[in-house]
Image 1: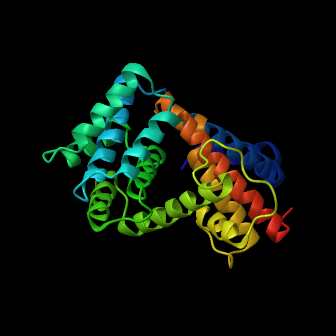
Image 2: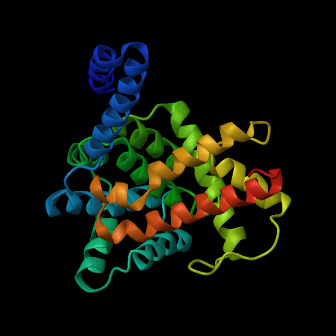
Amino acid sequence: MRIWGKVLGAFFGFLLGNIFGALIGLWLGHRFDRGMGLRGAFRRPASQAQQAIFFHATFSVMGHIAKSSGQVTEQEIRVASNLMDRMRLTGKLRMQAQESFRLGKEAEFPLRETLAEFRRASMEQRDILRFFLEVQLQAAFADGRVEEGERAILHTIADELGFSRIELARILAMAEAQMNFFNRAHGQGGAGGQYQPGAPTADRLKDAYQLLGVSESDSDQEIKRAYRKEMSKHHPDKLAAKGLPPEMMEMAKEKTQEIQQAWEWIREARGIR
């Protein structure tokens, strides 16, 4: 937490104008600290090598999850294929993604080593690690539920990336809500379509609350705070600055659109201005 701007601002403000000057100096110092914090949050873009590690880890771990139930199903293959489509992977890049997915299915796939390498390459930036985990949850939910083998792998992923079991359970609930929200908002299987018009149904509202990680009993202020927090976590420019491969930007944009739509439905239903 940055405080020196506040301390120095209040000190020099007091020298120049007593208490009133100190208050002004404290406010200016706070603005300075905040600006420096934001500046630090947007680091230099990750190297191509780091992005390649992210890319390989994403599809190989997805393949490992798909294989955990014994046989890779058509739904799981479709999820991986849809992800490649959303990332607009063609030619060599698509072949690399398919090869990583295949390697992940092998019995001797080094899951923990792959995750450890990815965590180091991401410089342990929590937003990037969470985004990676959310992508893997799409593979786990491919057939509409999470099998025991898939759950065990998700626990390993969470442990290696530094997420607690409680955090994983919460992210799982939000991921399930996102899946339901996406299907209901676009129409079943309507990926890439427009959101369906009209007032939100009870089911849509339930998913919208879960997508933001809140409940209907929470206050308007709590819900608004949760909405802003989720938007900040998934902002495409912020994730790109932290090393998200450019091919994954479209997914980040879709996520923010869903968060925005969830907020709009809740805001409309509750009459929040």
